[in-house]
Length: 371
Image (cartoon, rainbow, N blue to C red):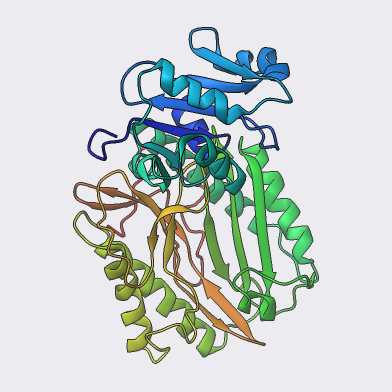
């Protein structure tokens, strides 16, 4: 904030508020706002009738300004600036704030003083603390264990929804919450985010599962593709091995000083060398996204992104190839940038014949060999 000459930051309920304060609050038309000045203690602006409930999370130590239903929360925020002798200073509003909150702040502060969609909080969130890294590591290890366990129960004729239910149940048994599962068979796997079809598994079809959950608010996101029944056509094996090679080489490129765009380019170069194109022809999406309190957050491993990687950043590494009407392949792991390169959380995919090799023997000292 000092570097950017910002007098205060204002955030509303959501991941930024949870990151800064630990407070989890649902969004509604009545905003709860957190005020963080460059000097001094934070403060809150809260709907008056919600004060008692808010105090359960906020505690009693910090100042809370309330507003009745016919009053403006933004006028109360303006009062805070006056009380803290910050009137006339630039105020940053977090990029995640809803439009009506931003406009309400602009009306009382003046648009020339409001720094809209400022990334200062996001830049802090991109660099994870050791505690955050441990939560992310454990969340992703738990997801890998759960997915490997659920995969043992696959059978011909099982529907995508049935496998998804097993994967969800296994992750919840491992202690994760807010679990989501995308289970796709055969041609459905050619859609990176699936279709509405609830397909039954046939021999010779690939299975693609993309899934994750939450541990203390921190997210996992893992994808595995495999062929559980029948012989794999040579083209499927070739696509899988190309995706795996792209993932390994991208992982080796993840290091401090490398840009996000450069890592994406490494994966696309592998695809091009095998005849799959160097653009979005068959590898139709970016290589990866940041992860933390949200499944998708900065940084993004995408073409031409000049953002430089730094220790503490965490992101997915998920190359894929998609053949409409036939099948798709994607492999995904979460990676942390360290001083010496990248670290995969939990084991990397095993060989084509057994991509879950090692997933059920995850220990506290496990580290990927991809580095």
